[in-house]
Amino acid sequence: MYKKLIHLWDKLRFSWYFLNYLVATVVSPLFRNRAEYQDLWLISERGTDAQDNGLHFYRYLRREHPEINACYLLSSNSPDKRFFSQDDRLIRYRSFAHYLSLVLAEYKISSHIMGFAPDMWFFTKLDHVWKMSGKLIFLQHGIIKDDIPWCYADNVRLDLFVCGAKPEADAVAAEFGYPPGVVRYLGLCRYDRLPAGKIHSKSGMVLFMPTWRARLKDVSVQKFESSVYYKGIMELLNDETLGKLLEEYGCRLLFAPHSEVLPYLDSFHSSIPHVYFLEPKERNVQQLLIDADVLVTDYSSVFFDFAYQYKPVIYYQYDEEEYRLEQYSQGYFSYQADGFGPVVSDVPELVRQLERLLHSGDIEERYARRVEKFFHYFDNENCRRNYEAIAALGQESKGGRR
Picture 1: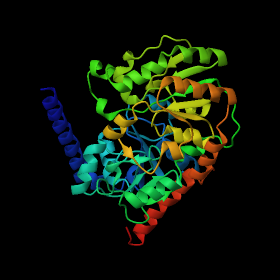
Picture 2: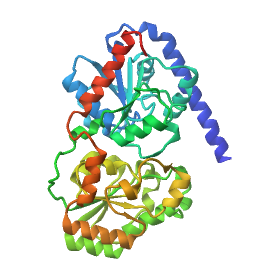
Picture 3: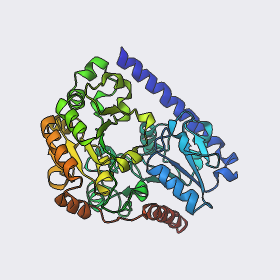
């Protein structure tokens, strides 16, 4: 019964999205010549957040190219509205102005595939039968390392697919089926703000940031608490040896759960001192990655941002077999051969590796060499490269080429 209700709700809301989009398309000629819609660059992440490559690219345009008619898409109740001022141009997510902008924008730019749409999944499917106008640009949310079929060209149409590293761009271009020139290594926009160099001030923070498990979405609290995912996290958060280690080095461990964990946040607790929880709505992810001394994660691509700063990473992969079977198959990236830190499968080994890193304070030389091999660009020109590539798409259109 529950699944039937969910299915009915999906049909109703998808119909509502389509109706609004249809009306916006019909009336769009009345708005096309208005200044706010002319040569519009519509920028977003998922319509509900602003901490990623979309925000950094929008900031770049406002600063370096104020002549461009750029707007940012954001819901009215998003906690990330705190990052904007009265001078910024925001379009409210799922408002009628949003639908008009979606129809009229020359460039539709997002850190998530179809993140500029009222619903990413529905409009990705709709685009197969009703081709969206303008150029579709995928800034990316993080560096791709796994085999992700829904990013294949058969499943999504893109004019520009931005990559954050050369091996990633080579793999995506070779395996995902896009026409030549669509996949480009330009660097992630948010990397412009990451500190350069190998010397960092110490904060005494160990950041624990695991990714999500898609199969747990919308499950009951009881089922969530019986999952291997939950138990692995709880084992670490309540390990007495970890508590003693944090005490010895004067450190704290900050647990930053994935945003999908929010409905189950009350299930987590810790019995040891120096462990703190940070809700998704309270945090600035990039600042955490800049401030932390050590990152502990499982498979989250945030480790690329961290390693880019030449800071030590530990991969806590206690459910690798289950993760590979149920979430993502391995792609070109091997944690053992290409990763930027030790891979552990249990808490005792994790604590041992953490103690070693807290004692040394730096990334090991062998992992630093892997960082240098993986990234080519270590500069503050990522937004510029993205801008020039997007602007070139417009020049191609004017020249009669797609």
